[in-house]
Image (tube, rainbow, N blue to C red):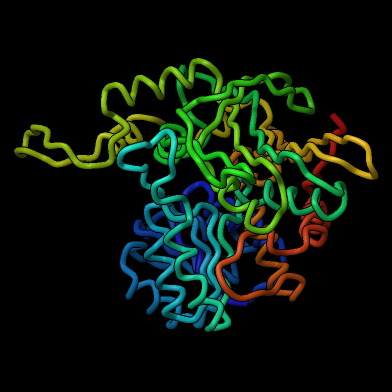
Amino acid sequence: MRVLLVGAGGVGTAITRIAARRPFFDTMVVADYDPARAEAAVAALGDDGSRFLAERVDAGDEAAVAALLGRHGCDVLLNATDPRFVMPLFRAARTAGATYLDMAMSLSRPHAERPYQECGVKLGDEQFAQAQEWEKAGVLALVGMGVEPGLSDVFARYAADELFDEIEEIGIRDGANLTVDGYDFAPSFSIWTTIEECLNPPVVYEADKGWFTTEPFSEPEVFDFPEGIGPVECVNVEHEEVLLVPRWVGARRVTFKYGLGREFIETLRTLHLLGLDRTDPVTVPSAAGPVAVSPRDVVAACLPDPATLGERMHGKTCAGTWVRGVKDGAPREVYLYHVVDNQWSMAEYGCQAVVWQTAVNPVVALELLATGAWAGAGVLGPEAFPARPFLDLLTDYGSPWGVREQ
């Protein structure tokens, strides 16, 4: 297997450090718009970096990405950029006939008249619109294969296959007790992506209604997270699992709730109130004359890079899937989860917990594809594949998962 990894930020760098310890691939080309980032990611591997190369590429330039795939004979494109570049990279992989993996799907657009009742363009719609073309070509696009979406979807498939006869509700629940020394507000993941998913209308799935939307931060609940994290207030946000799970797993209701905390929610609401969540450029004066800038990009530039916060960060992050239903005629409720301690991930990989937890899952998926344990064609989510091989291999990577009866 020869892999083109596009994006050498926090998650991309973590992918290289995890993959360097595994023998399943021949070459990984690490490409970024900033060649210094790609070179730094490869250089940091030291003696383990013999299978890695650094390149420069503009993720928005489909022709350049397809050419890079061809030049290095790469048969897989792994997208570690932000969601704005999903479609050009998705199309470039298809042009080159390469397998495609991402950790976030094509962006949504709210319904023009009823944004908090009806879906407009849903997450992943642009990719699924091309599913037949990929299937006919016999090429795989594995979408939403990070931690959430990704591992959370694998948990949903595992619950359906092995833990339940009927499922009433699947609810992804994400929470943490992470703190960052020296910062009053320092998100542990990309603020651009966080704003996108938290301020867009959240999507809920119900079997008798299909997909519909609600107000941002709706249906607050307190969820008790395992391994010492404890109770965290969670609210509905837009996320890919709600669009993926019902395509392959039978459930009467599917939700995604994020443990943001009251202070984080109020900060996001303030950004929205001031228009600082907008992506359309606004014109501002500068010493060199008027400049067009995206308010959201300005917010991101004002905050620390999440990948650099590991040394200041303390605590744990938890990704998991809560499932309620029936097994052998009796009610059952479980929470399948994966916890990463920042102290462990920093000591073991030099990566903060949130980016490491995101990065490990696409590497596991790549290894399953390389060995043939997972195989398919078309645009498929993690739920389309057997869960047990993934969960067994994740444990083999030194990062076990758990199940808690509720």
